[in-house]
Structure formats: C-alpha cells, structure tokens
Amino acid sequence: DQVFHSGESVMIETEVKNEGPGVARAVELLVTASPNLIERVPSVVAVGDLQPGEVKHLTLEGKISKATDTVQEELTLMLRAKSPLVQMPSPKKLLVAIKPDSAVGTTTLPVDVDQLPKQASLLKQPKAIGIVMGVGQFREPGIARVKYAARDAEVMARYLKVISGIPSERIRALVDTQAFKRDLVEALEEWLPEQVDPATVVYISIMGRGVVEPTTGAVSIMPFDGTANSGASLYSLRRLQESLAKLPIQQAVVMLDLSLDPAPGREIGGTITPLWGSEDNGNAKIMWMIGNRAVQQAHSYDSGQHGLFTYYLLKGLGGSADLDKNGMILTGELCAYTKWQVLKTAQEQYSNKQEPLCLPGPGHGALVRLQPVAQFK
Image (cartoon, rainbow, N blue to C red; front, top):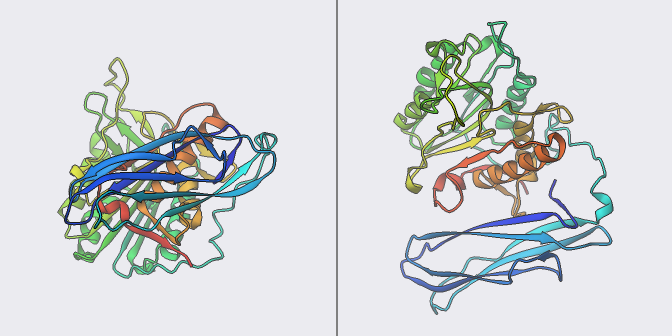
C-alpha cells in the first residue's frame, strides 16, 4: 500500500550501471532522508569501480523509525564518483508515507481494481500484442476450481487495452471454455507469429492452474480440457518460451498467476522445485513475472475479488507501481512492487508464504526490465 508503519522492515534494491565509455571509479550511493526515517541504512554505500557496461546490484535493509503522527517524507538516492568526467544521473526521489504503531491494525478496504484509474494512461503501443488466458473451471470435474481466474483474465485484458495502450484488435482473451489447448496453440503459434515484427512487444498473462513434473521441475499450463494425468493435454512453459524465442519481436512480458500441483503418480521425496524461464545472462528478451514460485495453491484475495498476484499486478498498472513517481511504470518496477505486496499480504492475512519471482532479476542489466507498461502525467 506504499505506507510504512513504525518498526516495519524495509528493503531498498538499487541497480547501478555504467553506460559510458570509460571506467567510473570509486562510485558511491548516497542515501538521504528525513531524520530517523529509516534506521540501520548507511548514508553512504560504496559501489566501487564500474567498467563500461558493468552493472552492480545493491540491497539495503533497514527499519522504519518510531513515528507519533502520520507523515509523508522523501527518500533520495544519489550517485557520486571520484572520476572527474563521469556524468551522474539525476537523483531518484521516493515519497514515503509513515504511520504510527496504532495504525498497524487499522483495516482498510483495497481499491476496486475493476474500475480503471481516473487518470488516463498516455502510453500507446500500436504494434504490441496481448494474449490473456484465465481458466477457473475445467472440463474434468475432479480438478479443483481457481476462484477468480476468469475474472482476472477479463480485467487484465481491459488493462492491457486502456493502460498499456494495445489496440483492441491485437488482444486475444481465452476464458474458461474458450481456452481449450487447441485455442492456446492457435493463439500462440498461429495467430501471434502473423502479427509481429522486430518492433513488437508481446504481453502474455495466464491465470489458473499448472502442473509440475517432480523429477525435472518442468512446469505446464492446464487448459480447460487439460488433465494432470495426461502430459499431452497440457501446454508446457518450455514450449511457450521456445515459441517466443523464435519470433522476430523486440521483447515479451509473461505474467503467470498459477496454483501449482505435482504431476500425479510420479511423486518423489523432498521438495519439488519448479523450473522457470532462463535469464540469458542479461540478454533476455522475455520478462517472467511469476506469482507463485513454489508447488502450492496461489491465494485467492477475497477482499480484492481477484487472485492475490493478479490483484497487485492490476493495482500496480493503475499507478501504484510508479515507485519513483516519474509518471512511467516499467516492467522491473511492476514486478518488484507486486512481489513485495504479495509477500506482505500473504504473511499478514494468511500467515503463510506466497513468493513471486521476477526473471531477469535486479542486477542482471536486461533491457526487458525497462519496458514501459503504463505512463501517466
């Protein structure tokens, strides 16, 4: 909710990249804020020397100091270096709202993400493509329903059109009985290749249920006619990744809100680790936003009437993920915002863990993390 409370833990992730032709020597990160805003975070953090093109990732952990009243403060991150000719970027300023301890237990209703933001998005992507799939019920009666998957898909399709600026004729939505495996194959492997060129950004959002192969960790999506016992009825993420890799596109953003089950009849001892997309050493053209990295059920967020991960994706796209308040929401910002909101809400409201995953992560220098997904005044 972008509001901190007294005593709450805070983590600041910073990615520093040398985009110049020479070595940047003795680079330092300066952290300034109002007095006693965040405890245990140093005011000066050494980054060190940066070679041309080199990226370094810093993680600063602190704790919000005690507050007696609700206040809004400014946190500023700034770089400096001893190299005389190094050109530094503008300081990053983050607005921080702090509430006292008494406000921690206050119950607030979430925003209605089904209502599009009053402020219109300025982003226009006439060559972008959106494919959304939400399966909450299945042809096989024994498969557990996913409460808000169909609603998630319908609202996400509207957000891709209105917020991300994708033309309506370039958006395909597959919901419940419209999402047979053949429909998914047709959309991804027949229709999509005919729409793209090197300037195309592809957005894919899939909500529902997935199956994990215990021995390999391979993850597959379950369409409406899928069954966990039949691998042939599923659509594997590896197949999706290979299909996207073949396309002459600029990049792709894949958002997955899946409850994950192990494939039946192939149980093995120990923890099953799902295998997700490759980071490609910073050259990735696919951004993976994964709402649930473990083999478990993803939370349905009844207060928001959506899956927990999708709810915060939508809220982030509506403006909340603009953490540096510059009017532009990037894929890296959206995934970082959604990840920490889901972690926090799952722990506070369900007393267990649902941990999202962002690939490529901070510090890997991938340009796909800089793809705009919304723009406001």
